[in-house]
Length: 397
Image (cartoon, rainbow, N blue to C red):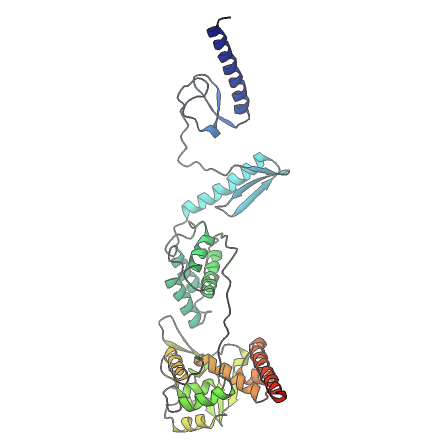
């Protein structure tokens, strides 16, 4: 046989074998197109422009304007699954047809609802959430919510909440910008807002909050502070705080709440969204409503000299100013910057050194949480133990 005929025969056999193998491969793929010229089935996975059999240019069917598509059903074990991430639903059925039909029905209903629903931004949703609870929320809580609305999640605050698909990514980005505790507070509000509006979200992790130890003054440091604060504008507020009063409680104190040498801790004052103090009849919790005997003679002197009218608060400047003045005096005296709440904890520190029982300290200080006072006592006891051991070592040396 001539070499040319032999080569052509080999080429023909190779082409035939290729067509057989390629045809078997194509039959294993999903067929959804048909060539109009040769009528061959064309697999969509290849995304062809021309027919792989006859070379004719293919014409794809254009997607209809309102056509609704769903993810391809997947078989796991004996069940068929369709993951509708947009709706936050996993469809599980016995057959592919049932899974496809149910998924399409769910998506069709959601799409129809979305078309009827006007856009709702996160900012608007937070406004609605606050307005729905206006009478039940405290002014300070509302102030905190508006602070979150003003500062948090800037990328999506003015986006339609139904259009945001990856809330975990939103939280992750925020965690790179602010402290973990801030992210936790921001997401707590946002999560409630999304639930109120039926929005699915996929947030499964938040940044870990590290609890820093809050400062207070010990027995000796309180003596230094009392001498340093004498005559300062913040002295009256500081002495109230050293009687265990919270900031909101001392801001609500008026002359009519000082009776028979006792401080009547009834009511509180908090900042509202406009940064103005609002007087409340309620305390933070039930144990907070209490009567405290005045124990610092200097406080008795200041109250006797004070000319504040009945019904008018003793402390009339911004609470942040009070904290700043206390911290300035602490800094000048080389003491921890405790602020108002640190002076309240200093009361518990002093009570420990004077031998008060934890329950007595909790009652006088209006603590509802046993852990707060107990933690202070435990840390002070550990410090005392170390000091006593050092003293014994010094004796033997």
